[in-house]
Image (tube, rainbow, N blue to C red; front, side, top):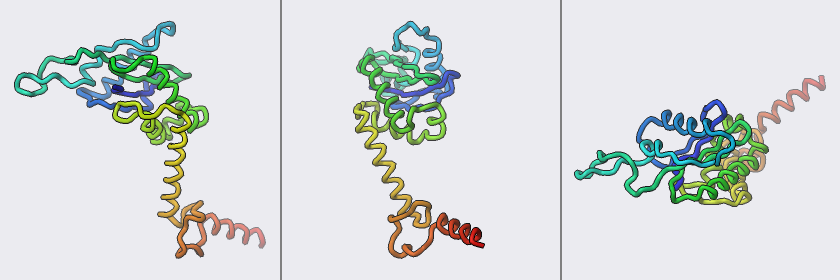
Length: 210
């Protein structure tokens, strides 16, 4: 299972965070721990590592004899959390997974995520994640749902994102008949109304004619 997906810049500022498991302690502390693990890795080492120190944050405590979550910490099934990451320019893409996931498969999944972001933003950069965080989360949701991989085909992911964006525009145009670019989506009752852009263009043309 995938427990978390994070994107950091080189200064440790998170630009995208998504957790698929309940967080047992401070989310900010967890983010700092994950960044410390990744940022301190020399470039020549592999792109995944065991992270038992994260288990207290992302895994529930075992139940004690009374059925309460007051038992000793750690995973009861013997699985260990691992951090898998790839660095692109000024961004670190980090996945926190358990041993049920293949490290090489997750590395490929990170590449799929990056290519999908590139399709949406044309060579994605940090500012795209800052100003379009909602679309970045939508792209991630097309790839992963509930910690499980949903889609890995970049073309299918891009098609789903484009369809959703088109549906949002059509919904906005139908709900706002006077909005810019409303066009043919405007109903018959408002067909004769002029858009603000058309009104402004007419006014400017009238001033020029004088």
